Length: 131
Image 1 (cartoon, one colour):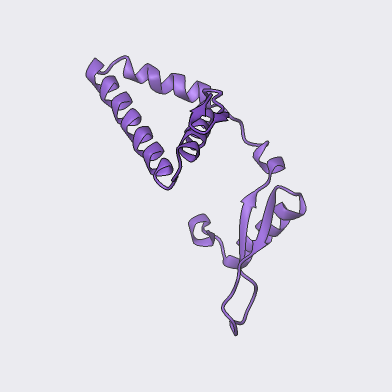
Image 2 (cartoon, one colour):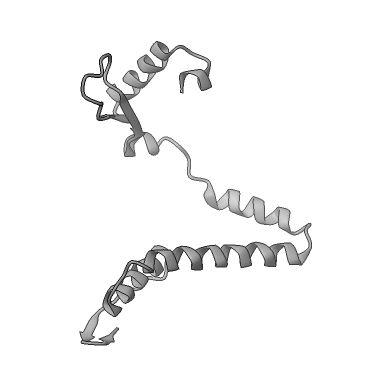
């Protein structure tokens, strides 16, 4: 990270420490092999407080990108959405593959659909009956 920012490792550590003191990032100590010496290795992640500082303009960005598609051939949009659909189907199939029972498959599929915004739930009504 330090080299990406063009600063020293010590400088990066100082900046991250200051952010951690303000509860903007959180550090987790990584496991080290036995006998390894030196400073503990830390992994940092942004906290909810830090994340709130970044504007979430996803809608505006999406609309801007869709505006660019107006100038493209209609088939470009069709191919993009087709590719997205195929990717999502493959990802769902991979998640469903380890499920052994029908109930496990149904409940996992409900989770996948819920994550996609469909408000899906699964309820077992009987041995092989679900809602």
